[in-house]
Image (cartoon, rainbow, N blue to C red; front, side, top):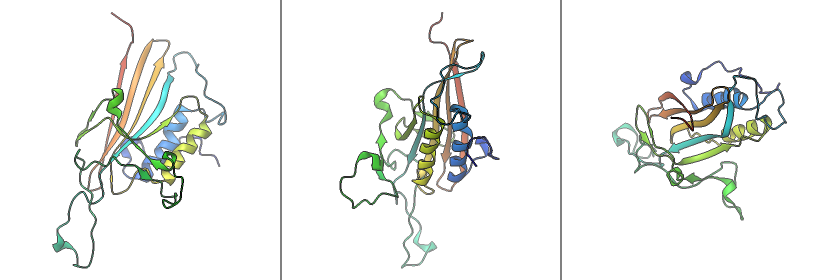
Amino acid sequence: DRDDGPHFVKTFMEVDTPEDWHNWLQRVMIPVFYDSLSPTAAPSKSGPIGMNINVGALRVRMLRVKDNSCTVNKDFYLDNYTQRCWADFTLDDMQDTRIPFPSINTTAQNLTDADYFNYTDGCSYRGQNTQGWYGRYPCGGYLQDFAANISFDEALGLAKRLQTENFIDHDAARFIVVEFFTYNPSLDIFTSGRMFHEITSGGGWIPTRRFKSFTVWGP
């Protein structure tokens, strides 16, 4: 009964809803990066000859637009009906304020940053902007890091929390990316991975996978 294997029927390129993406993260990415056969143990830094080793955290980053960032022609709905609207992604319409978890009572006292999704300006630590098919996206966003030294169960718990707290909003989310680094000791090569979806205002999901291998020292 454990969610410990890649039992997912859709590939990354076929994901087209928030539910699909959360299932892909929990049933494909987390089992790839963490040892589901030893679910409570911290991951080993060594592996079989020829295998890649994870370097650093697995990062999930999301960008979204503000509520009511566009308008709907009033000819399409009744006068007494309010229609909300979320625009395609632009820097002017991007949301960068913290978002409370749906499970949190926002009227309660002593709320902390741990009760919110907090926007981080990734450009402050030399992050890179991303050029997609549909737009250009800044290096910041709402982040969830999966540390390299946590167990499979801990990583899966974080992934499930993202789904429970509606990390990818059906209406407002416009960009979701998974970023990571690996190292192959046999070849002495690092690889950066960036797998992202652009989400249009009409609900379309545009997938892209980018990998770059490089050496740290070389001629």
